[in-house]
Image 1 (cartoon, rainbow, N blue to C red):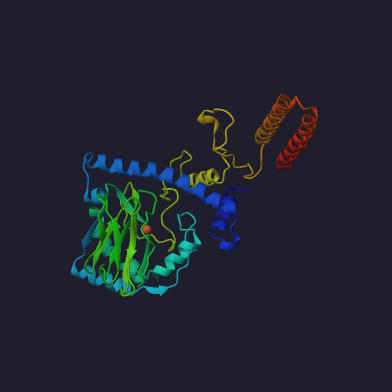
Image 2: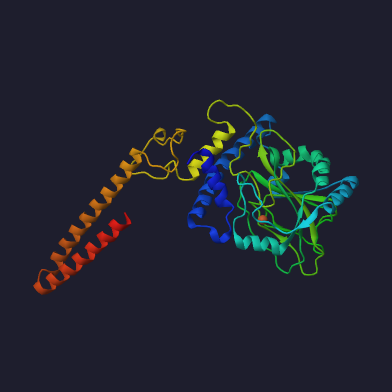
Length: 385
Ligand SMILES: [Fe+2]
């Protein structure tokens, strides 16, 4: 399987119907999530440090950092545009498989059910893409200052919280920390139309109360939150713009599907030529190989120095084939396993002789029974091998 085939294979399994999924697909998803979290931590730290050092703000903090959320209000003209934008988007049913495979997505069937139960979804219109920058662009610097990072749009979705007696319940999104949610409320947010319920960083339980044309940024992975609604609520229209840290700010609207959240690996195809195996395509490909378990980074019989764990591949190498060294190392594992079994078997015999030496009949009977049991275990083990 070559590089393109591996990407195609991984893309295909992520789009399989619920019933066609296999347990190993969940393992691949988990591997991707672990790698993603580690890479995002480093990216977030570097982006924040870069911003703070560039702007000489090393000791500074912000309202967003301290409270876990901030709110603001658009002017009248922007508010009327925000309403027109929302109205230009047509209602659609949720398609949980509408995501880019390069992006983190919600994979769980029960959560898809919850998303549909709580929200109505809308398709972002052409009018939205043409005019929303007029609202977002003026907020560029404020978003930078509150977050202490340059940023870009990771994803977006347009939805309305339905009148329901129960929402998802308080939760943390537990996503990358360099990724935060920004909600624009064309009709405002309050108890009568529906709102957002947050437990801020000081432990206050807050139901956001804002006028039409307001916005909220909150730390969705640090502050517990839930949508607020009731059976009497009118419904809360929302334009969600998710932001992610970067080294330059780019307010371009980025949409890769309603269940796409942010790139698994915090790299964008910037066309930057690094000439050192870090160009976008190579980096993506290397990460896919790592997550598919092809680097053997997670197995060790003895201590190794990092240079022995190479994950730079020969292009000619078949992805799922084993080379001589891999075959030799699995043979070694089997040999060690058998040695362990024989050793334990002999120890058991010694124990039997010690404990049953006084009674010859019992001794012979137990001895034969335990031998039978141990031989059976060896056979089972050999079969598994
Ligand atoms: Fe959430």
